[in-house]
Length: 435
Image (cartoon, rainbow, N blue to C red):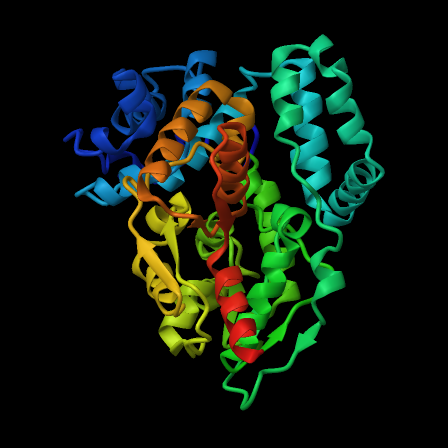
């Protein structure tokens, strides 16, 4: 799109008009629940977007700040009786904020260029940064700095960010997973596996577990060593053209006509991956392939429930209590709610207890916990309090951002609970039964 053309004025006006202003979304919106301010609600934000589309309001700094105060959790879409496409409105509004540059400062421009436009456009760069961070942690320098007290000399926000630094895995997905993993027993399907960005660096073991579970369920799994970012980071932060570039690269690497399914195990990535058809709707070269891609992309829980899970055998291990936190984009974005619970209940020694407000955002929301730490911590406190009421020793969740947020939150608050992906729990059950 031309940089001088408004992303909201250029949007199909019927999308902007969908909202009836009924208010049913209000109780489901975490920012509105916390502040009780109309502008912090989906209805209020859509009113701002419509005012810009109608030329009644200029996209000001206050508008841009409001769009970035929104979590983008899409809980409002689950509550909306009119079927408002808030995901598209949200992405367009942030793109409008970036087009106008009302939030720009030299520091912000540098951070966005380094992360969104450089680091995540080529995952070899991200893995290099991951290796450097892994070396820093492996030689004990991180532990030394934390124990030395030198961090007390830094501003509070920098101390908070340092405490959130994830532990990088000893090996990335390409080191753990063969390019082609054969099915265990008769091959029923040929699928492709997406290993992700943060998932690859911080939770490559989850990718390995996912491939193992797929193989044990009759899938031959193709996992290329070099992969691209899915583009959700870019689309959700106002860089729609970069998101399109990455969509084309992914479709080229995983031709959808060659696989029964293209598997993702990250809720946030999956929600974006299933909308390449819409993202490339105006591209005559890629449109049809993108539409086929959308039909082939499956969340791993959705796929296993659809094709029929081979349940792990009961190995007589002692029972444990687990609960399940729903990734916002898995439940609200992809409408996948029952399948993860169904798979967890198939684990013989696992007793699943429902988590109060299980589909309420934990505050991670992509990079929200980095740019809006106060609200993110309020949501995390709420989530941890509910978690403690369950008596669970394990909380399952299916998104790397949620997993890291809950790990850091439980650790900081002294809550002794294991955070694990459902695929890890399934893989462990298969291994125990195998022994």
